[in-house]
Length: 180
Length: 188
Ligand SMILES: [Zn+2]
Image (tube, rainbow over all chains, first blue to last red; front, side, top):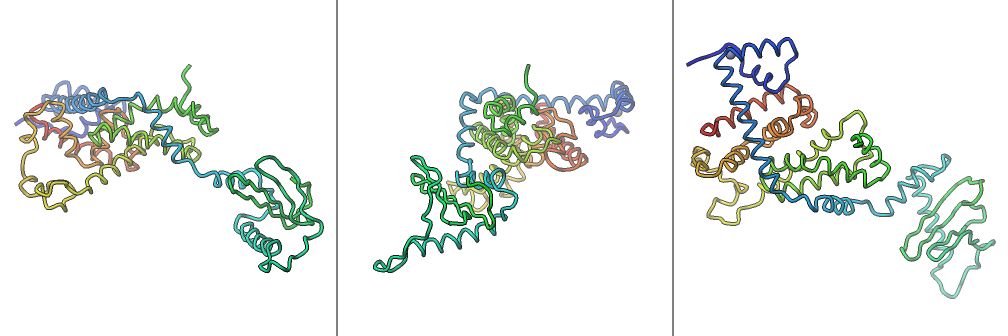
């Protein structure tokens, strides 16, 4: 049986065009004169041809006419819910630099929300508390939403979308700028 | 003039879906070819490719400019195809006569393991014989042979996609070729 000192792996590197120029030329001239390496190279080429052919046959039978529609519907299914987009928008664009980070913000908001509910909706029906002075001021309103100040020191802003049943509360400890 | 991948990716990051559609149309056949080679089923291959593109779009903001778009895309396709194959092989056999129902849908009896796969498929068409030979390879060997022989990628690109060394690419490729040569010996 014929053998060759050249490794099959070198022939593979040659076949895959992974050799640098001087070695590539050397291997090319060796393969041209070596029966064993010529046969090895031919076998690599044949495997490549068969694999490519088998895949391309199946590819030709594939239907791409609704491919994009399939991708688009998957993208829509993966889209994050709107509240997450709002939160992201708040974090990246709207939150002023002086505002505390999310955990402090959430804790403060939760505490204020509980306090507000207790003040405006006392458990006993027959002992209503008087409204705080000044009363909440409507700062902006449209069909779906309104923005109210719930604090006379302008530290809490409430944005309430009744249709979507969504509420965004904006809290600032030392807010001194213009109201939104 | 055709926009570069980079230009399209930049527009996608700004939320331009039309730009993403161009990328999809540019790479859909290539991704389906890889998935077909991995899964041997047209419907699965189309689904996995669509899933991969959707994943790419959803995570486009995380894509770093130093990487190439298609190596990232192909990595996702290969990983999803491997996951899909795992899910399928875990599905129990419907017909219990085919095995004990615990072999994950693959006949792993000694008789089946010792038989010559070529003998089982010699009467089939050449295309089927090749596909069955590829199916005999492990997912890692399949991926490397498809990326090289079908997509024509360099060892460097394959190592980037499969996140392994160039040496690993070379040895997997060597093993996969030897295995295919042995399985297809009558067709070479
Ligand atoms: Zn030789």
